Every structure is written in C-alpha cells, then in structure tokens.
Length: 404
Image 1: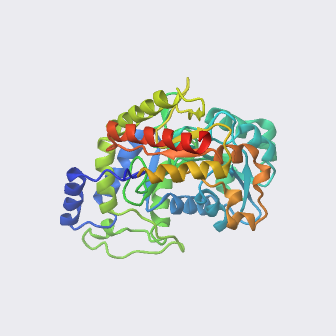
Image 2: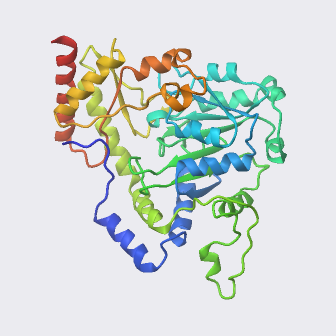
Image 3: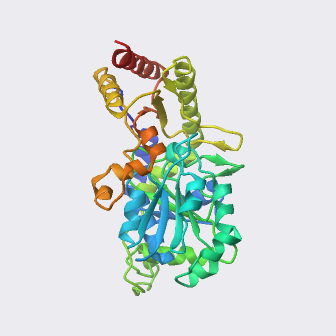
C-alpha cells in the first residue's frame, strides 16, 4: 500500500540520532541550540525558540503576550483544531472567519469585518504550505482606524500598539513570499515538526520572532527558554558548568523544551531541506499535468507572482462534488491500496466547537472547499512510479463514483 506521508528516516538520520545518544545529551543541549540558530539563519527571522510541539509553543506565546479571558483571536474556520484549542486554553474567544475563493487561506476582508476592540491577535494559517496574504494583513493591523480600536492589556501589547499577527506555519516551512522565507513574513511564526511535516523532528516545533525593533529579541529568547522549562532560569546545559548548580524558578512556567534527540533529526532534515522541497515540487508538477486534463479536477494553487508553496499538501478538489460523494471516492482510492486524506474537517463541524455555538453554515467557502477536497500523497521517497499509481487510482475512483 502507498502510505500517505511517512517520514524520511534513513541511515544519515539514524547515525545522527545515535551520535546524540552516545554524547549523553538526550534532553535540551548543544544540538537543540544549534538547530535554533540554523532555523533563524534559514528563515531570516530575529530569533527562534525550539519547543516540543506547535501547540505548546503557541500556548506559551499566548500566555506571554497576555491573551486572557475577554480577549478575541481571529482565525480561519478551515484549519486543524490546534489553532483554536490554544485560544480556548488561554481563556480567550476564537473568532472564526471564512477563507478565500481562490485558495484555502484566511480572507483579509473577513478579518477586517471581524475586528473589534477585544481583538488582540490574528492567527493566519498557511494551509498546505501556501502563504497567506501577509502584506495585506500586516497593513490592515497598522491602519490608523484599526489601530485606534486596539486596547492593550499589558506593557508588551502597549509597546506594539496594535493587533499582533501570528503565522500558523505548521505546513509552510520553506515557503516564500515577496522574497522572504516563512518565519519572517510577520510578527510571530509557529512551526510544526510533527512526523508528517516536510521537516520533522518526530514531534516538535519552533517559534520564530520577528517583532519590530523596539523589542529586544535576545531578552525574548532568554525569557522563553525560562518559560518552556517550568520557569527555571537555568537549563541542564547551563547547570553543567562547574559550581553552577543553583537555580531559581522565576514563574510557574510550562514544560515543552525540545530535546537533542529531536534536534538531531531536525539538523539532518534542515541540511538537505532544499532537495526535499525540490522533490515535492516535482511531484506537484506531475499531479498538475495529469489532472489538468480532467474536467472534474480542480487543481490547488501553489505558486503565484509573489508566493511559492512549501508543497506540503496537494489538495485536489472534485468539481461539483458533495461530501458524501467525495467520501465514496476516497473509499474507492483506498480499495486500490493508495492512502489519501482530507485537510481538514472544518472547526465548526467538530463537536467541541459545535457545542460552543459555531455553525458551518456561517462559513460557505470553507464548507465548499472541504466537501470536495482530497489530499494526495506527497513525500520525498514517493517514486515517480508510485505517483503514477496514485493518479491512476484517483482517476479510476472518480470514474467509478461519478460516471458509472
């Protein structure tokens, strides 16, 4: 069976992890610190903090930024539950808005209409690895009329003086926008390095900071290293220095630091990341050429004049297709030993959010895209022959369900 998205684990990765194990550093240590610096250099941001997941990294950030009960955070209805869960856990209200017609990303027009004096942050999701319209979003939050509505809760928010823009870049490591790489498109970027992501550390993530010059990014880095380690002001690496055992706990923090075992995988992945992107782009091109011939197929947008995807997900859509028909097509594809997926079940369709009063009927474009979407396999080790098998399986399934 052709799997959907297995990680690239080869001898080079095994050797690097083995070296980490032999070194004695299996928690946060020199490899993690090097990984953070290399991400900063690759992305072009000001500083990076490695964490154990996108979710916990964002949870710590929202806590640091002072997001609290009574606040609102705008996000798309079309995203994974983690994007909204962290807002709930911070005590704030997720304000869901619809997506663009031309892609799967959050609508800037919908953002503008949803902003209130309670809005403290916008989480824009780079779905499938295609960057959101950050130039317009960044301009929106700096608009004098929008800024005049902003009510700061604390000194950090007052220093910025506007709504903060967060890139949920779980899918978009390596994506490009106006000559920059993901990580430097806006104020804050949160990456996921989960097992199915383009760049994996098994589990893991990173927060990239690119705030205005008024913010001291060296101090932010130190503060976050404390916050992600229970509020302890020295990590294990610092405590190995002679006589440096004594520590303090400066606040009741979190526990979500990345380990050197995870970083060992990430360092190999980052070193050869361009060949990963190149292979993914090639697979996208093969899919595009094959499905462009089919009248039923709607191809995903992955490049434009100012954007280039990270090619994380190939989101094929079936024209004039409802949810049940799409599900039957997926089942037929699986019957041919090809794994596919759907990204994602929209937040308002999930029990946790339906119970909170969200209704998918309020997000017509989200429903339109979800009900006809099928994500096809894309990963480095997927051979051209396997790609051909995927294409044949999809075509056969569509023909059987729609036309027989």
